[in-house]
Length: 116
Picture 1 (cartoon, rainbow, N blue to C red):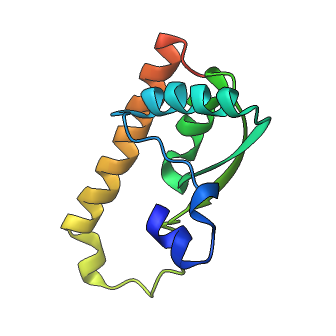
Picture 2: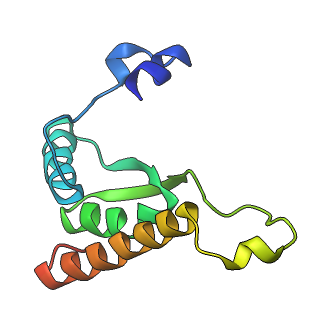
C-alpha cells in the first residue's frame, strides 16, 4: 500500500506504516501509539468492507477517532440464476468462510471487551 500511495504521488514522508502487528487488535493498539505520538486527532481507517465493523470497533476501543473507508466490496450485480448456482462450489465456501471469520472475530472481540 505504501508503494501504491507513492505511485499516486503521496510524498513518502506523509506515509506512516505499522508493520509489527499480527491481528486487528494489535494493529489498533500499535497504531494508537503512532497516532498519539504524532499528535493526530483523527485517522482514516482503510480495510475491507467485510472487516470494517470489527476494525472500527477495535480502533475505537484503542481510543482512536476513525473515519471508516471500506474497500473491496464483494457485492456486485448478480447474473441471472441457472441450475449450477444451486450446487456447492469453492467461491461459496470462500464467502461462507469469510463471513464465519468476521462473525466469530466480532464475538471474540466483544467478549474480550476490545470494541469501542
